[in-house]
Image 1 (tube, rainbow, N blue to C red):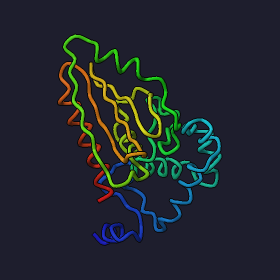
Image 2: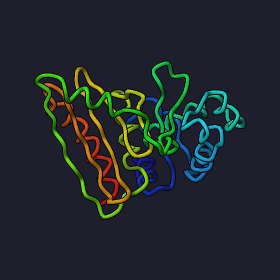
Image 3: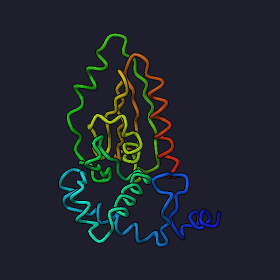
Image 4: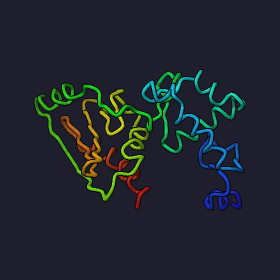
Length: 202
């Protein structure tokens, strides 16, 4: 209980509710920030559009034991800063995604042209567009990834539905759209994730 209180106060880091993180208590949270900053500032990660290879991770965190490297990687995932691909060979650092969107419009338009396709769209208007939106949602919803993502958006897929999330720093908006024969369920799932992300910025 005391450890949890100290965690809540920001004096240490401890996550007893997560199996991968419950065995280590970090006494200096600033220490973690320094190591995560090495990843965010890595030229190799930036130049590759946000890809952190295991070799680059070992190079950046060469002074950490292997178990602590894995722990720090899980912490980054816990904070929605990164996620691993299916083969777990690389991690995608969402804050280092490319600024230019990849070609997604054709795939998105084809879904609309299908017979019986419907669409649900919701637009969130914000006072400002803070860092972390929509990249934290991209990390949170990575199980639906189509590997089509950029700093301000992503295309997701679930069964026979496509979803598009886009943020605009010009007018401080985030838009979530889902297309397919029965979009409400997938839409509700992503909307919940987006609202959890927005709740970080009261």
